[in-house]
Length: 94
Image (tube, rainbow, N blue to C red; front, side, top):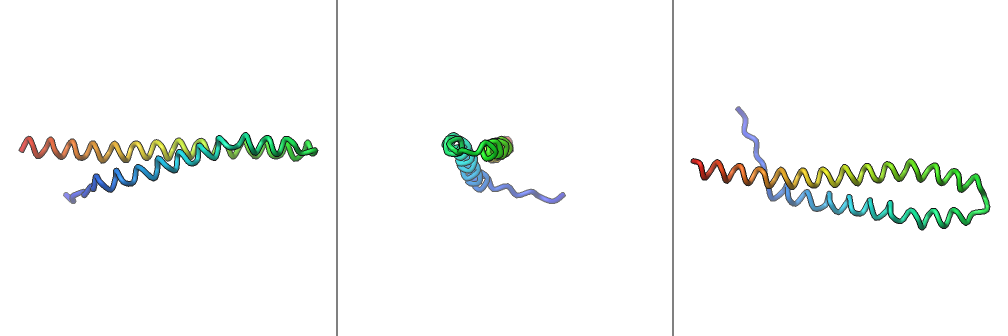
């Protein structure tokens, strides 16, 4: 049976950028209010309506990507910690 090599420090290191990416995406989504204020000042109702439709779709995508990145970051960090704990238990039991 082939062996699987796991490098817990690399898993832990990979989690941090994923969490930062999730935070950055949420920051972008939070700044949408500034964009809305700028567009709402437009004299064109068609522009405002088009922008609101675009923003609704875009915001859903950004929030979804942020949730996914955050979840993967937590899962990767948890996998590294779990591997270390299980490996330690096996070594202790030996």
